[in-house]
Amino acid sequence: MALADLGDGNHQAATNIQHQLVATRSRLFTTNYLIDETYTLILARAGYQYAIRFLDELRKGAVSVLRITNSDERQAEQILRQYADKRFSYTDATSFAVMERVGIEAAFTFDRNFTEYGRVLVLTP
Image 1 (cartoon, helix red, strand yellow):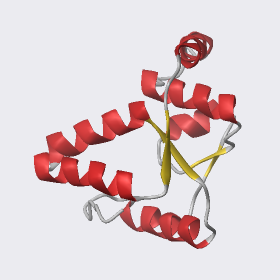
Image 2: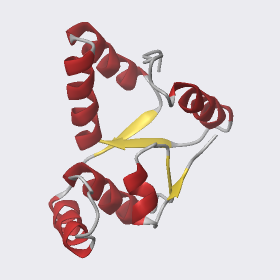
Image 3: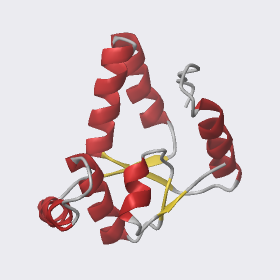
């Protein structure tokens, strides 16, 4: 994606990982909840035109969108109860549930909660 926050301390690492994923033709997934979170964050920080651009770039790209199911939500709630000592967001927990449901073992994220969950490999540069 062409959107960039050059002030983000993870920008260069994210760019490196993105290039690796593209070069290896990795299958990329996101969830509708992550799209919601990202759109809202971009809207708040950068404005409408960048938020819409994010949606346009996402739809043009090779990222498959996985929809959160009722079962995923129930599993997410169980995860939140099981890991009461963690600060997982609801979206984090639904991401973990979806990853388990479809067998995704690696995440492209800088969110330490994914490392704390411990069931997925977090990609690093």
